[in-house]
Image (tube, one colour):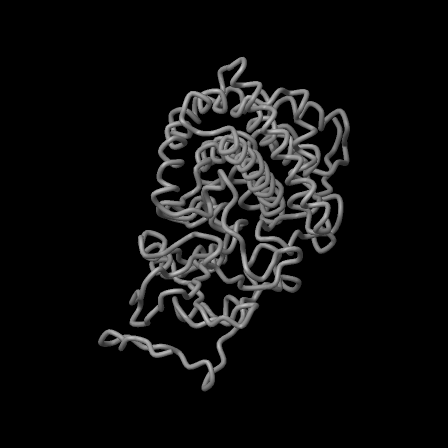
Length: 413
């Protein structure tokens, strides 16, 4: 099939003369907080050809400015059925299906715009900051329980998962008694060791639970986000889909940031000492950890039409993989990017994406982490790993990076 001529100055890499790389994902050697070494080696070019799992020839973006430009471009689509997977994923078909009802991540305008307008006002900076008191209360309760269970615990189970779980329950109006039911489903959904059948069952169970909750909110509304949305034109199926997505996303990403962020700070005692000495650095610490760790990676998009970027032509139908890890370590945007520096002004990082699909819950995540990290280290001044760093099991087979568990201990007074 013949293509239209390329614009002046545009070039394409040759798949035969110089075989494009596949997406590097192996983090088993080196620092657990760094991107794969092979990915770092590819960061000399902000945009390059890449071979996908099904043989598709698409693109890899590692440059910060290039990523922001593409994510803000309306000619780039997020629709799942247009995407090619950069690496094989167990239980995921080679050809992706369209987004299920209520899954705003896999939609474009105007469908995405409709959902986004209904939700944006529920996640404003002001509204999320109003929840700070509840975050503090839940954090204290989790720390109390952790202290009683200690002095050696798995921080993931004792702290990193419960704090965001309690907050997303509070926001959506999930009864406290139901927390363990939905939390176990979310954990299974993101468990890298769970089989396809278990994940499918967890997803179905989560949607069933939220569907029941939607009906309860319609019958007896309470002061929460889900009740607010029942007054909109959303159907029960749409509300269940949106609610399930928010429950899963609101728990998993923040839980992994809390656990992996604690691991990173314990591994960089000079930075932890600086935070302990000045809790006012909590906000900057959160932004730097978001940049440094980049737990949600990569972002996938598809070109709806030909786009010229960096002197290269992205053809209509080609998939673009944006490596958040690489863009957040771009030395042109962040000097000495491989160093964790909580005094760094890390604004502009890509941890929450960019453009129309930038993470809705980013302000809630910020509030949770800004409260949780200082509180954890203030309560346990001698907190440390209970196993050697190399024995901490990493969660490296999903697109949400983190630790499977984080054994920690402290000195009892």
